[in-house]
Image: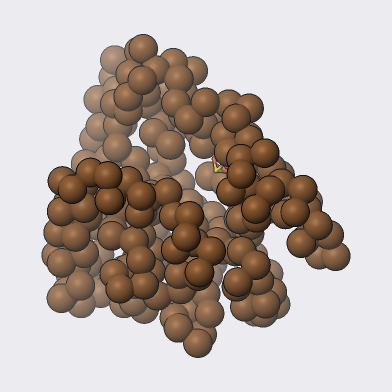
Length: 239
Ligand code: SF4
């Protein structure tokens, strides 16, 4: 998802996302059975012990702070991101200021969501996007904290386990989009057939564009989620 890949297209030159440890016991109060089964970020954490330690340290640093303290830390991170973009622009690169709030983990508390809302508000030159399962009042619903932010696209991470909660959330908040995770693209289309609106199959998940290449990263090239163009469907089988 980087906004600036290396010239050979293999690595990211700018980090444009933040991570927390995944799972119900950590930062994902809205985790479902389906996402716990297939969570790609959780699998990476199990594979790379050092990564897990970094993410756990991120959560440990934030969770004892109040809203203002969390917003300060997150704002500092966005200031670093902006400085990275400006340095690349000074060298002639084209660098969209798109920042994905979490590449791993989720909103773990109401205060934390409010802190991010403060950060989004105070950085209008950056466009943020986020996927979240924290939209069910039975566990944690952060959507009221994220209302009315024109430089933020919010995607509910939906699968068959939380479909009813997602329908209720969209009744309360018509401005949110869905990222629907199905077993296959066909079963996703079938699950959502009765619902209004346009849906896009994720081109990276369907192997139509690479995750990263010299042309850019998938999400920046595709642009659907960063811009909040519409609902998207992901397939566990990737077909
Ligand atoms: S639909 Fe596009 S922007 Fe969204 S996750 Fe897939 S590649 Fe990224």
